[in-house]
Image (tube, rainbow, N blue to C red; front, top):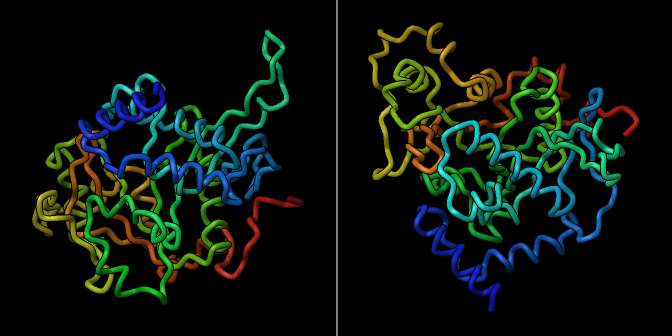
Length: 325
C-alpha cells in the first residue's frame, strides 16, 4: 500500500516537471531487469577498472549503491551548484535520477584515498565518486525506450540511415565535482570512456551538451560559431524538433570572432570539437536543468588521429592508464 502510494506520488511529480512518462511500473521492472543483468549484480564483485592515476580510478558502476553515488554527485553539481529545478522527490532524496538510469552504464571517477579508512564511529567510509558519465548503447536503447536525446532532437532518421553499419552510443549526465575539475580527472574520465567505446565497438557517440542559462542570446557569439563553423554536414545532421527549435545563427558569419567564440564555449563542448565532433541544427532550452542544449555528433572515424597517441588507437582495447589491471 505504502509502496504503491509512493510510486503514484513520484509519477505525479514527474508529470508536473515535464519529465519522461514511462507506463506505470515500467521503471521498477527495468530496475529489476537491470539488476539481473551481468553489469549490475545484486552482490558486489570486484569493479571493472578502466584506468588509474594516483588515487583516482575510473571504473564502471557495479551495483545500485554505485549508481546512487553517481546520482548524488549529479544532484550536487546540477541542482546545488548550477540552476536545475528539482522535483519534490529529487530534493527529498538529494539525487538526480530518471527512468534511463536503470538501463544505462555509469562510468565513475572514484577517489580511492577514502576507501578502507574509517570515520570517527568506526564504520567503513565509502570511496568518493567525484566524476561520472552516463552511457547508453544502441542495442540497449532499442530493447527499451530509445535514447534520451530523442526528446529534443529528431535523431531517428540519422540512426536509420547509418544502421546497422554504424553502432551508436549516447553520452549524458557528465559532471565532475568542483575541487576535482583538473586536467588529471577529466583525462581519466575520457580514458575510461574511450576504453568503453573500443570495448563495445561503438562507431558514433551522440548526446546533448549544455550552455548554462536559458537565454540563447547570452551565448550568441558561441552559438553562432557552432552554427557557421561546426554544424554537421547533411549526411550527419539532425534537427531539433520544431516546437523546441532555437536558431543558433544569431550573428552573421562575418560578425563571428572565432577566438572570442572558442573562449566562450563550455569546456566540454570545446573538447568535443577538438576531437572532431559536429553539432546539430538548432539549440533547445531545457527549463528543468536551466540550460541551453546543443546536439553533439562524434563519429569515431572523424576523431583527430593525434589523440590516439595519448588515449590509444581504435583497435586497442586496454586503457593506457591501466597498467597491471
